[in-house]
Image (cartoon, rainbow, N blue to C red):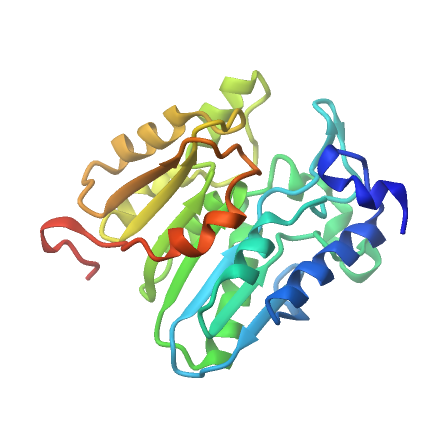
Amino acid sequence: MSVCFLFLLSGCAATSAERSFRAETVASSGNLQKTTVRTDPFILTAYSRIQNPGQPLHVYIEGDGYAWVTPTRVSGDPTPREPLALSLAAEDPAPNVVYLARPCQYTPVEMNSACEDEAYWTNKRFSEEVVRSVGQAIDKFLKDAQSPEIHLIGYSGGGAVAVLIAARRKDVKSLRTVAGNLDPTLVNDYHGVSRFEGSLDPMDVAGEIAAVPQLHFIGGEDTIIPLAAVGSFLKKMGDGRCFQTKTLPDASHKDGWIESWRKLLDLPVICKEGGDRH
């Protein structure tokens, strides 16, 4: 085993093979089986565990991954070095769980020509094509699990995708985000980088999910997603009856979530004053 793999968490640039091996190790700890899903226009990598057909489906959406090598140099492979959403999925005791990698993560370009365009993990990371692809994959697993409803969980940029997905569906029972990028424009301005071109904006659909029970987890030590992004999303939503937040004071953008996840999953995700989705 290489020294690089042993020090993934320190930021060492792991190879694609090492990152895939890491995902397999994490998935096996939660009895999640790897599969690929052909969608339009991406082939997505997924890990799933369907043990009780007919029960709700928990869907985890990965973050942006290793999108940038430096602030100005795009990565040739966005596969995450440490797949946090996959680790959370492996901790989830629900019978029906699926993890969806984002487009072009864990999928070689030779398998998926759409991934020749690096914009799909930079400016177009939340594009119509990306949201449609993830939605199609969810449809596939929903059918496999014969599930009547979905519980969406999105990490970081996967939180933005989860919001955009929730706005398009009527079968989303709850939405959770972990260090979620709910206001990409504010976040990009905060870091002094250019705004996305070609992406959909979760802020534009905030009002459309106001009746979806949701819980947004915030890291008290998160230097990537500022707290203001959550506040601006709630302001845009307007009706906050179904909107809750929970701050983990010692959690950063990546650290402090896995060990707490089972307890966090036990927190109720509800609407106040009888607010429910119609």
